[in-house]
Length: 208
Image (cartoon, rainbow, N blue to C red):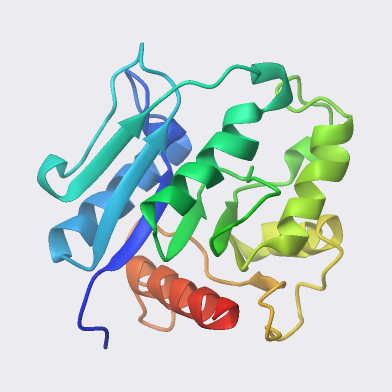
């Protein structure tokens, strides 16, 4: 057991909205549970000052909302987000919404929610350098990858050029079968926050 909280930076763009949806609801619940338990010192980072920030535990979550020019180039995600995480001196950064930065100055964990962008046409994820080259390369550099289901992990492994059945190597560049279940217990009896914390520990140790 750790005797101090995790210091975690979160790509909290899914919380930077007037109405939570899908991923945002899961992220909100996760932050709420872990912040209330004292297990995590959260630093929530987002990019829309014109939108409200949904903060589950305002007293235990630091919030930083700032803009970066260059939306078309994903400048905030690829440069400003990891740079701010580095400046904060966090132990790990979590990208919960499938996308993540290629530059990872601190150990970075990503959650891939689905592989639809690579399997069929999606206007939000047009084919090109960002989707087909930058993100797969970023996944390859990740300290750890989690998925929401086994159905996601196998095609996710092909996208990352990693086998979904591989044991986690020292670099942690493999897919971890730790589904996000909104805090409910799975068949092993391990809760979702606990499993994610285990992933952070492994990522931190592998980068030490």
